[in-house]
Image (cartoon, rainbow, N blue to C red):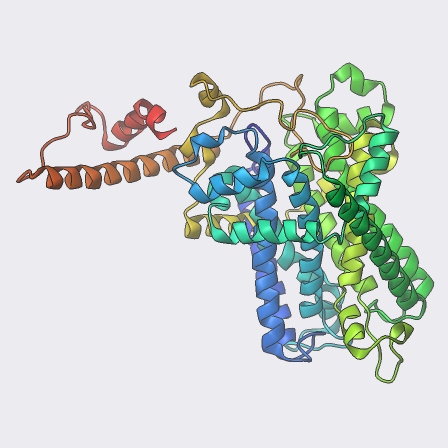
Length: 555
């Protein structure tokens, strides 16, 4: 990510072990998908009771859109340090997006709106694929259905592998290609419209508080607001606060009266406790990203001043540094799991004959039943607030045993390989959409610096109080070298060779068009682009050598 961390699943495990995990995880993903689809088309999920086709279409669209939302975040957070002129011609749409993101506080606005969009899409998926009580599909034993359907595990695996981890795997390596389309532009504008609507403006009060508490008042990159803009800002803050309060009132009323989709037999008091516990876990995991970013900027001596922070850092940066991307994968799994549990706890469902909550109309009650009130609460209280807190007090955030235990749990989740199928999904998507690594187009950060187009290291340099997600956590400056795997190098080499062939084919076409316009009767050899090949080298060696010679042109 412009010098950031790439989500990678290569490690010290053997190639056989990796392939085995990919096979069983992919098989698990397919099994879960079949179960969910069977439940939908037999009208045994919440929304399929209305119409199976509606539930199916909405679920597929939600997964596709969530994939773009997750991948776009990786790209739009990773690209700001890169000189946009490097990809202005090769990726016009990406360039246009970055012109918007790099203006004023637009990145913060995008991240805030995007956070609600993620929760809303997960809650929609839960509405479409969550089975009704006692669902029976494909003649499966009750125990199997209870584990995969009743618990929500099947929907969790679909979301994690189809929409979240696979998207971030591809976007972390192919930032330019991933958002070089109008779907990414649409997602950007929807995220920013959510923010400008004022729905989440109560978060700005939280932002100001943590900035003040950290002794670092919030400084905007925008032009000073006019009196009218300031008035409208505070109106939206008040409206947002009122909406959040009402959402809490409705949700808590439903929880106390057992009127949610919570598992049967769970007492209302337990549902209420689980609601706050899982929101807190989501918040801790959201904040840990920022805290880990901050601690990576510190020296070993600074980290050692806080015992729990040191223990956590020792685990995070142990060995060859693979635990850091391992945590990011495990964290994504854990957060997604918590999202679905919170969705089940907070999605309102009235039994026939029960009165509407607070006596609202049937239309409003139907809106309550979408689960979007729970998504709003989780976005503000369970996600953004914790990120802002971690940005203001990263060391305090790390100096607790809870952070250490959550790190260990996330690493355990990643180690199981349960979501290893995400790399298979990512590979298939990469082949279909013809993604290439960013180095193919703009070179490595070192190559860009050598050309006088170095990345802006001041952007996302440090964690700033009151700002969300400064980037993906990276290895600390005192960390030893980290080498690429042979698989990484071969993959990049093949992509460079393929890109070189594409460039040569385009040059051939341009050259022929030039000769035609010049009135030439037959193609002439273009000395400018001709390459001298050593006849003693094999065909593959010649191509590799030509790639090395032409790297400057490709970058």
